Length: 228
Image (tube, rainbow, N blue to C red; front, side):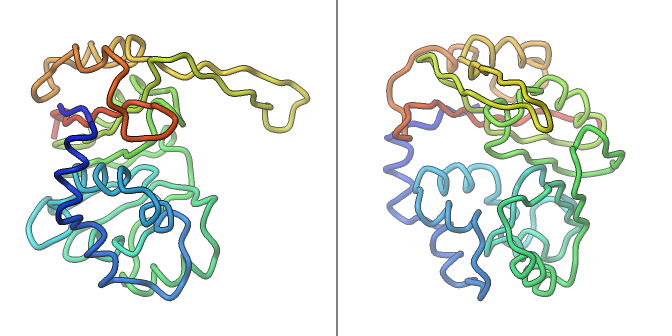
């Protein structure tokens, strides 16, 4: 487990390998996920923490990326291995999706919610910047993913200063106020899996200093042992 903090970011930016690889692999199509990486050094650090061994020869022979989007680095993730992506790709254009598919020679793309997907036998499942800030089903995701993989890697995002969002349910005239997970709720969702989490350190979810993001959110990366 590792908490992403300014000191870690400063060290990473001395070489910024994700930026270097992306510059060499630029695509002609404009991709939203790549723009987010380009504009946000902290996102590049977290990407490096989760994907670095998949961006060169070696690493896992198969990888399922849940909510990973498309970037200039997707062809590197797909090269030489079975690669799957579960993501509706709301942020990407048809031209961008087609360009990446052509560059990689095709990969398993599932335009659906992960919860309804029955796939397995993966060496690695990765979910970056998805739980529990975008998808609050963190514990349910681990129950779904662990039987399907040898390892599950996550970045989990939480706010220890209360933060909430006004939302409207799709297709309904109903507004909701959603309170973002804090560290205590995030830790509680993970504790049933703590024996599987490498270097389990529950204290990483406490405190509220040293964020690498302007909105003060905290991020912890972790690796969970799967059943395969």
